[in-house]
Image (tube, rainbow, N blue to C red; front, side, top):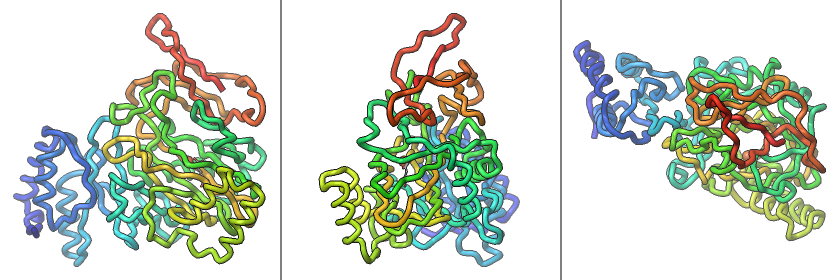
Length: 446
Ligand SMILES: O=C(O)CCC(=O)C(=O)O
Ligand SMILES: [Fe+2]
């Protein structure tokens, strides 16, 4: 059904729009919306009236280039402007929060269509080139319910920044540990990693850019983890398939369930800092096949590389199984300067099981260098300052009311063996005593 959008150019329509906006603020339960074409504007408006309980203009309506539309007047102006310019793409993105824990999630687009993320959204890393988002997941098959939301982020960072990041991390690399409890790390992950000082020029620029790319409001250090730089050797280092979000029960009573108003990792931005001759992909087992742009399907010596890797590692090793899965489907090829965004939560604030992914072993060439940026839908339970010291916030508090309950100062205790790294926190499930005066006393076990 095609609706006439011309009426949005008139003053009377704007008055109606304001009334609609007020009404929206007051009505029932919400639902996730993807891309809406403003040719269907009446339908769009009616659906919101029927379904939404939120003030969408808080942060949930955007032009396709990522610019926020802050009022119905702005929506009307945008439609009028697009029409006058003969632009048939007068579309908005709409992702109304369905619970207090949810956040804006970029919708998938059709193959080969790129969202140009405006300068307002992201300060361009590469002069003259806009930051663009392109779906790697095909929306037809990789919808909210049956696939991960994976995007390539074009022009997110420059090769000079990649070099600066590797240089900054080089001397701090230590054996990687896991932010999860009860998983034997040798069985799932081997690599070296380090966190960038968040106050360094390169880290600040990248972290703010990452945050802005997600369109989730004002930059907040408490909602983004320090950039983690990872180096995989060419001797079998890899990270078996996992989800980046923290599971329920991995904490000290912190609410990790965003659908119940809690906080967790919302999205990951992967930055590939080096080229890898073969292997080293990021593998998404649930990613639909068919998008070739970022996949390594055509590696000519693949079979050769795989069999020599198998000979070195042993046929029944998890690394070999992973490498085979990586090669056969659903993988993003590392390339210096490439960035990938994927979501660990759906727009409805549920943890997305389909975001499962792994770091594939290098099969040929030198080391693989990459970086992880994790962004949360709300404040994290921990916060690390530029000296690497941890701070804890009272669990379950809203972002406005969080408070530092226990600044963790000094050197944490050393652990045995490969896990000596103190760069990641092992969340420990343990009841913590409640201090008199209502403050929760917590301690990190490192
Ligand atoms: O190395 C990769 O490509 C992925 C790494 C990863 O998933 C992680 O460190 O959480
Ligand atoms: Fe991961």
